[in-house]
Image (cartoon, rainbow, N blue to C red; front, side, top):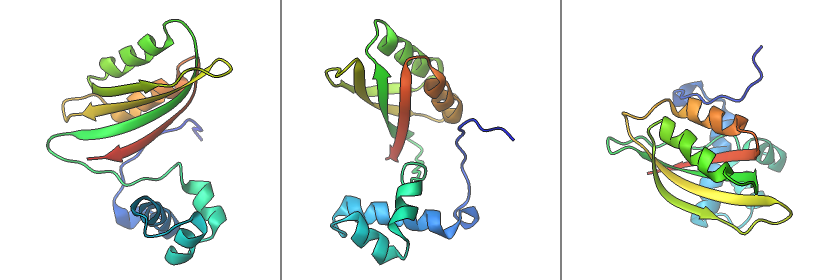
Length: 147
């Protein structure tokens, strides 16, 4: 079985209930309707361990005719040209970079946040994310989706 990371778009009815509850718990936290992870997990009927296990792997995807804006967060080495290479990878997939924020590197590791507009004419977002995750010097890539 292929163990590489991949992204899928599936209908809600095909998603296990625990994952849908994790998405709901995250929404409760984001909107302030739950003050803590414990409270959010309790409100939706899952354990905190289930929340922690899946919180970085499931999110609600919003699709619009204007495109989707995705926010990517990276942990990457502070190396000459690495940010340029990451931006070139995004450009190869014809996604439009809206914002860039990079922190001052600590112990040779920089935190980077990018907002990227993905229009219907853009390349495969899953392929773009896989390419970014495999890029030498990139430690992690996390994605959030929003309109």
